[in-house]
Amino acid sequence: MAAGPRIAALWTLPMALVAVAVLVLAPASAMAAYAPPNRPGPALSVPASKLVAALNCTGALRGASHEPVLLVPGTSLNPTTDYGYGWEPALRKLGWPYCAVTLPGNAMGDIQTAGEYVVYAIRAMHAVYGGRIDIVGHSQGGMVPRWALRFWPDTRAMVDDLVGLSPSNHGTLDAIPACAQSCAPAFWQQRSDAAFIAALNSAQETFPGISYTDIYTHTDEVVVPNFGPAASSSLAGGGGAITNVAIQTVCPADVTEHLGIGIYDNTAYQLALDALTHPGPANPARVAATTCLSPLMPGIAPSTFSADYAETLASVASTVATSPRTTSEPPLACYVTATCPTGRAAAQQRSSHGLSTQQASSRAIRPAAKHPRRRHKRHRRRERESPTALAAGLR
Image 1 (cartoon, rainbow, N blue to C red):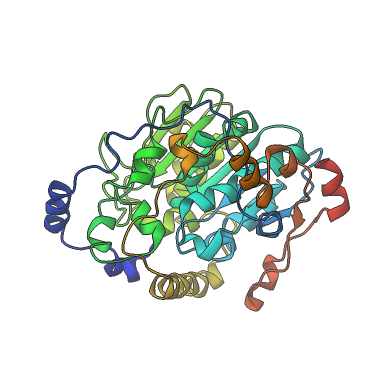
Image 2: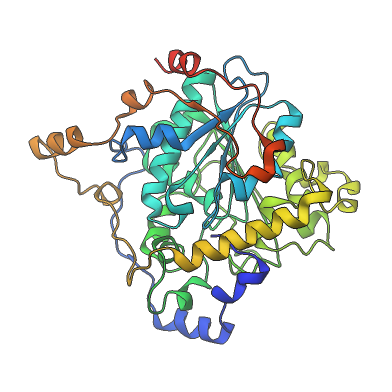
């Protein structure tokens, strides 16, 4: 989920009302039986053309000196509004190759569908690079890769680091009253009592061989609660290497909120950078004290930051206001509970749409297109691989 201070009213109601909602609503799918963690994932149901079109890369993945980074945007955001004037220019300055995935409807639709885009992105980047990749995600973007890792186990050997910036790993209390009558599918699924959240965290929250760094802020007004030992963004157990850290641990005076932690906050960036440049997850002790002197992360242009951020806020507000709403949470897909049809019916269903693991590895990653906003010509991506070269790496 993602929102800024100017649109917090779209989400937050008095906490007393939230508390009542928590008492009245029983946890969703408390008794549900979920697919075993190592059960092979299903074929992807999203048409291959859409998966390929949604993944845009910058820099040469093949032979890169640093693991490529996959950027996954949050709810109501896209790569432009979430990473276009902070993370992307910062990664270009470092000389690291990266890809950004655009989730359908600015990540306002069914997160199970968004998860398929992430599965494809992981497989495709891994195939071209030839090794494990890193993932950085903001809000829903830090949580949805865990859906891919949970229900498509082949992706686990393809990921080194997963860095979440205020990820909605255990949902949010805010979404319960927000969806009292109707709301966008992704909001339903990020309620703290959602069936989706219960399924996401079923069996185990992390997996061995992957380093998880979950960075959050005590002043988060969207992912609530995000303080104390039960912070929503925090992860525990399962065998992965985990660091859960609030930006206030490093910089006590940093009051950056939910949207800012993924877009411009320097403390969050330095913690993420520590994870991406060392074995294992981030170690807050390695982050320099001078980090606290600079509120804006590298990549941000101070002269245009106010206008850039205002444009993001306007885009978020418009997306939230105009996205389709539903009166209930989307049902869990059959693969979540291992109840999909088998035999001939399943074969017919698979042949009608989607990508298998092998098919996903035969498609091309698109080089990044021009930045869609004319005012950001300076952010146009460079060092683009040709589609032919990328396709060859996916064979």
